[in-house]
Image 1: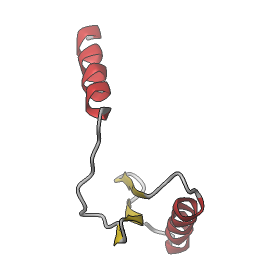
Image 2: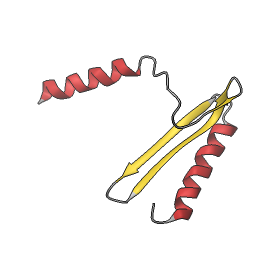
Image 3: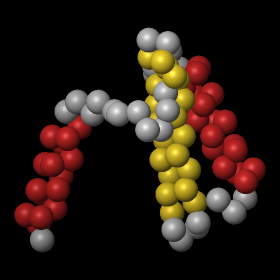
Image 4: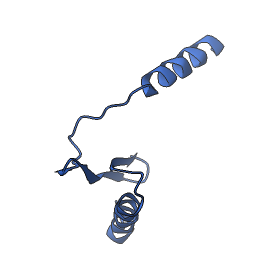
Length: 78
């Protein structure tokens, strides 16, 4: 990111949200834009005393079904 302070602000806000919201155990944030030269990949929180990290596998549960249905609908419309 060109403006390092902006990247730090985004990371701080993300980490504070994860820490302050008791419903969230851990989370990952990925922001990428070639147009604005931005690549931010952050993980925060923990589960069972294991700190979250960006290379940690994620359980997506039923999100895959929604994603697949959306792709099929887009292809059908085209």
